[in-house]
Amino acid sequence: MAFKFLSLFNDLLIPNHRSLNFRALIFAAMLVAKKNVTSSDYAAITQIASQIYGSDMRRCNALLNTVKDYVEKIQRKQGTLDRMLGLIDSELLSVPRYVKKIDFSHLRQLMIESDEEDAITQTQVYDFILSEVRRVEEKEQAKANKKEKNA
Picture 1: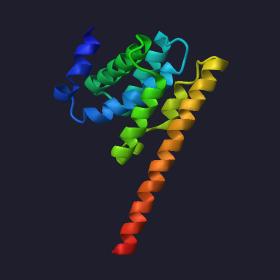
Picture 2: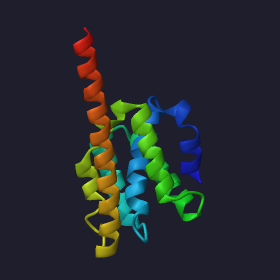
Picture 3: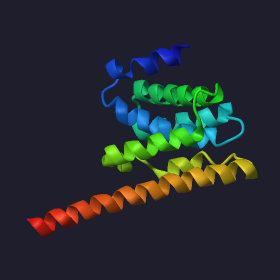
Picture 4: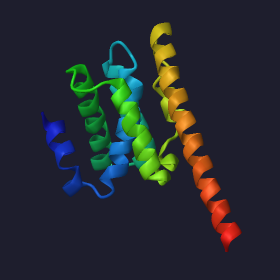
């Protein structure tokens, strides 16, 4: 219950909470692609959070708890993996700088302990995110080229 409290009040507790929520959404999508999310999956999230935020335990805990919130919503059938992927897509389109928030080595870490069936689904999620990142980068490059041309 404590993590729900924290994720509800990320706005107040943590600056730049939107990018933290975006990261949590990415990680949660990778986890819900598995049949069963385990404590070792959350341990991997904790390790990744410390790689991202260093010793800022408030942010590390907020990321972990937000991932747990997203995963629980899917497990309670209050959403779907497809819906999560749609949110990732719309966030990337509306905030292109979020492309820089995605470290694909972190996503690969979440695939290490997966069985073959889970790995297939996680690879599909990984490939989707990769293709969306490329699409956003191409769109941003086209905008930059157009600006240069008009300048």
